[in-house]
Image (cartoon, rainbow over all chains, first blue to last red; front, side, top):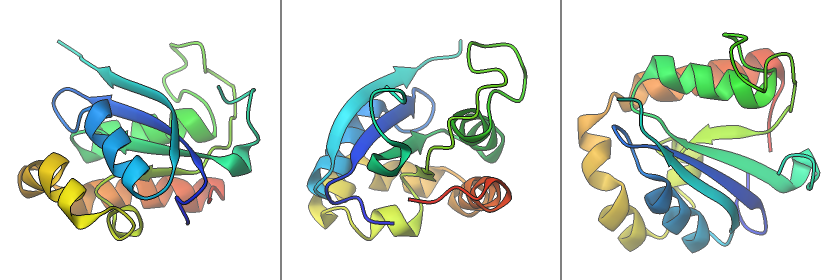
Length: 42
Length: 97
């Protein structure tokens, strides 16, 4: 699986890893983030 | 989003906190919502899905970025169980990037 050049959907969760953190990781790997969100189930 | 792009262009990255939620999210974006409660019930998007803590993802992320944004949670979460859960879904649904 190559992230370089891929379009990433970042589905974060408040009790886990937030969408913004996933998006930063994806961008550093050369991917484009097309959707970034953080769910919260409280 | 899944209709706008070809599945081969997309990768879903999860930040879910445990194996159960990881399996649920992964199934939802591959073969459809397993709880049949949401809009994706019965909708098989067939998207490649990985957890951000899985080695195939971690190995491609810039180390300083991973350290700043994810490394702390990696120490807290059950990384092995989460990775197994998402890997199982990829295997059972034939999903891969």
